[in-house]
Image (cartoon, rainbow, N blue to C red; front, side):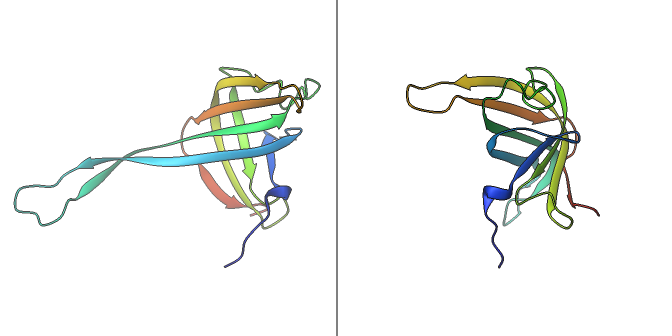
Amino acid sequence: MATSHGKNGVVKLSTNAVAEVTQFSITETAETADDTAMGDDARTHLLGHTAATGSITCHWDPSDTDGQVALSVGASADLKLYPSGADTGDKEISCTATVTSVGVQSQLEGIVSQTFDFQANGAVSHAAVGA
């Protein structure tokens, strides 16, 4: 099984790379409805709605107007997440998302960081770059 190093990860807002990204995550979930009946030996379920949430953390860069600054609370964002790079053949995870929270963290002996939480608005797609 092949593994990848996160150092090549990229986050894009539409076609613009978000500056100074240090980490990102996305979690996809599916609702289920239990349809088990008396007499069944095992539980069964039906698939309901799917959803996705995630976060992006960056070194704070207020000059990144097409990236960090555009990710304001309530903004609709065309997100493209690349876990191991954005070269042809690399994996692209994309969705239209709503930015649900923005936070800034500052500490005495550290780099100021900014975190953006988002919720997908519709389906998440998985494809290869250039496909």
